[in-house]
Length: 241
Image 1: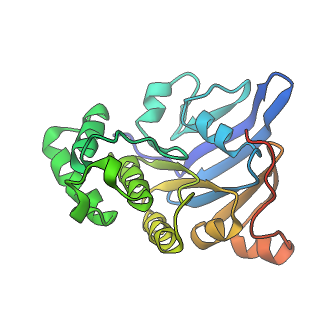
Image 2 (image 1 turned 180 degrees about the vertical axis):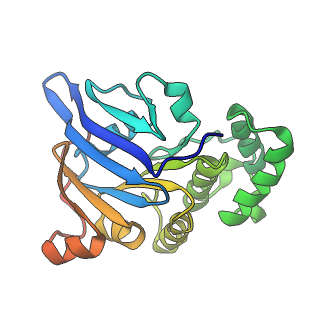
């Protein structure tokens, strides 16, 4: 595998429109190797649209995204090999067992059988899912389902992990578990997480990009942003993008 560059994500002048609506408006930022970056903004700010463009699931109107040096638009297969993605309300097949699902996803990612079995054991341990490895996915709690989603995202040890609202709908205890799990990835993988709740981003991220109207309106470390701004803990929702 080629050496991972120090800048794993490069976003330059990204624009995405839906008719007259501009969901992402001239967005530019970078993410360093091993860094955890949060996208913070109200519902409808353009966070989910941005993440879908980063993962190659949605084309941009203009601008560019490079993942580990590969342009997403022209090399989608190459870029997806470097990315683990957990969308909001992560869909899981209700009738598969946890270990079966991870095996299935690992084979889709072209992981060698000899390596996959050991790697499944590793991510089950990391995500505190070993006791649930034979449970049916449809019978898991919301928190355990979120952890299965994270386990699947990190399974192939990608350079970049993208998570859209990873703690949505969880109770306080489950939120702490997922926060700790994300923090454990620091230095090993570049992570982007989105949220509309400031404490979630503050508790986990090295750097925060505040997005509104599809633009970055502020950025910096959580401590710097808290010092400079009196932003409310939960930002006011607007129509979702």
